[in-house]
Amino acid sequence: MIDRHVRIEKIDRRELAKPADGAYAVIWVTDGVAGIEVNGELYGDTANTVFFLHPRFDWKILRGPGKASAGYVMYLSDAILSRPALSQLHIQQVRILDSNSVHTARLAPGIEVRVHTVLEMLDELLSTHLNHREEAIFALINTFFVYCDGQCNIQSTIDRRCGKSTLVYKYKRLVNKRVTELQKVSDYADQLRVSAAYLNECTKEILGRTAKSLITEQLAMRARHALMFTDQSAKEIAYSLGFSSPDYFRSFCKQHIGLTPSEVKQA
Image (tube, rainbow, N blue to C red):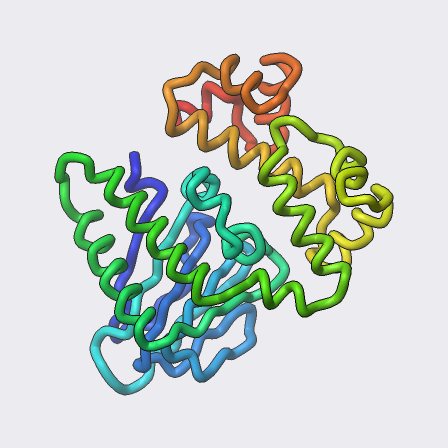
C-alpha cells in the first residue's frame, strides 16, 4: 500500500519535471543543479535547499555541470501528509499545504548531512520487502520533516510578520488541534477573540483561501488517512471526526475527496 503514496527519485543528470499523479513534491538539491523552474519562474542558487511544492505548481529541475547525483525528489500523497505525527509540525501547517506560495528552506551543513542520510535510507527501503517496512518508511519521513522543521524556525519567522499572519498561524494551529470538536469558523473566531468575518478576511489575504476551507481540508485529510490506514469502519471514523451521522460523512467524502468512504478504503 505504501508504494502508492510515497516515491523517491534521485536527481541525476536528467532534467526532472512534475509527474502527472498529483503528488506533493519535496525537492532537496545539492550543488549540481543550475536551478528549479516553478510555474515559469527560475529559482537559482539552490544549493542545500529544500523546496516544498503543492501539486498545483508545474516545476522542472535544470541540471548543471557537476556531480552525477544532486539530491532527491520525494513525492508524497495527501494521505501521507495527513498522518497525525506530521500534522503537529510547523512546516506541515504553514508550508506544505499552501497552494499559493513556493516555500524553501536552506539547510545548514550539519543538517544537510543528516537529511541526505535519511533520504538515502528511504530510497533503499522503498526498494525492499523487509518486515515492518512501512513503519520504518513512515518513521524516516517523519524524521526528515523534523529536521526541516527545526532548521526553518517557522514560528519565529511568522511572529515577526504582520498581525494578520500571526492570527492565521494561530488559527491553523487551533484547527489542527480541535477540528473534531469545532467545525464552525465562528467557534474558532470566538477562541481567538476576533469576528468570523475578520478571521475570514485574514485567511483570504494571507493564504488566498477562506477560513472554512481550512477546516474542510483538515477533515478531508483526516478522513482519507483513517479510511486508508486504519481498520475502523466508516461509521466509527465519522463519529470520531465529529460528524453527526454516517450519511453526512459519506456526503462529505463524496464532495470533498471525490470518493465515497468505501471507495477510499478500496483505493
